[in-house]
Image (cartoon, rainbow over the protein chains, first blue to last red):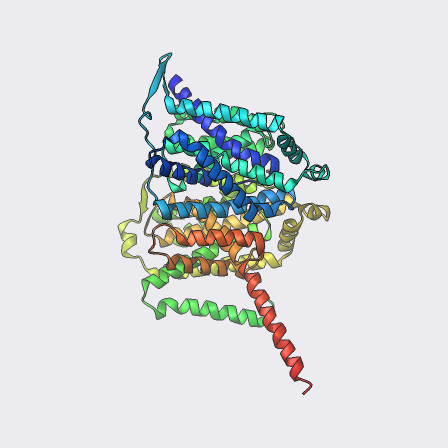
Length: 288
Length: 317
């Protein structure tokens, strides 16, 4: 039981980082990037490529991060940027459709390039676990949790202490008013989108250390969107606790219903939340 | 269908398709056409809700799947196929009523994600409960005739076309389009928006359930979860958008393109046609909201324009 919970918490940290990328664009721009999971998988392949050249998986994070940042910027300039003018509901719907098309393209390109086989990275330290209070703590899971905490603090400092972060928060509250105050909304959107895509780099490596295949993207997107809904849209600080919550719920459901219904539990929670609490569970968020 | 010319053209197409099994013995061609009818059924069903009522659903695989599952189970337990088909469609309506209606109550813009969630739940649950492939009993395989599958698929496809074109031309159809174009304005002029959204969902799920039944009748052996796969949700979305959202001919057109690309790249690993289709889909969502139908209409009107100008120039002489 305790051991199940430990794995639940460690998985939850991973869900939290995935959700952070989705929540950033969803909260600020009302873009729902369905392709986020596929971008994570593409990042994982990049990391695998470098790993085979002899680079340590964790050392590939900065490279993947920069590559995904540039990729995100290109995607925004070519496709997503055209939706800025749309009203909120239409922006969610159209970004979702574009993301959906992008997901099909990325998933099937990945299958063409790397075949449909399951892959994973196995560095020498992948089996190391620590014993504490009679529980096993895997090294990779722990470092994932640590990275998640680091990431969320950096993002928090960035959004709360920098001038750009202030602009982002202003745009997320009312982008017309923000534009009247002299904020370049287009550029703020561009950079936020690119940051959101680059946030996929850490899950890329962590998922790369587990196992992945070209079509796994949508599963990870599901985890992310469930967490975003749990935390409430526009509430970036709720994302991490909500991720842990989902991880623990899943772990408990494995305990009660068996591993085959793990995915179902999260989705049932998700649909119930959509129907019963459209604003999310934790706090009301910055909903207009 | 007031235009007698259009009726004539439609009847010609139906007559020609009815003759196909008599003219050819090629199983490949007939199977291909059955798949085509299946795509038409599914995308018409999707189009009624997504194209005419503006509710983009990613949950149609659940309706399709439950229709297939119920029809198959009824049919195997010796219920005549037509009754089993109706049973499948009713089960699909039931599912839509239980889980789809709450989804319609979600905040605007969340309907696609909610229905996607439901489709995944349905797929995993069915995969867990019935993990075995559902083969037909041997006496059914002995009596298997492809042409009866063909005619069933053809008639259900025609039925779905008739239902959708009838509904779209009725008062209900006007209300659907009004809700799609501006929900608040529709509400303001006294349209009960929620009721009409439910209506669109139920009719759409009915057709999707029939489509599932055709699938169950056509396939000799498949995993029970395979009609629940998400690709059955993605397919009608793609074909309808690419063919032309909110038109009767658009989804048919889109299905032709999809099948053609699919066959063209049938021997490559992975799915090249999906890469091309996904990319076209993005471009169409962004730049050509009317789909291929609007492009052909523009080209046709361009021809007409030049034709007319040519005529007026020659007339004075």
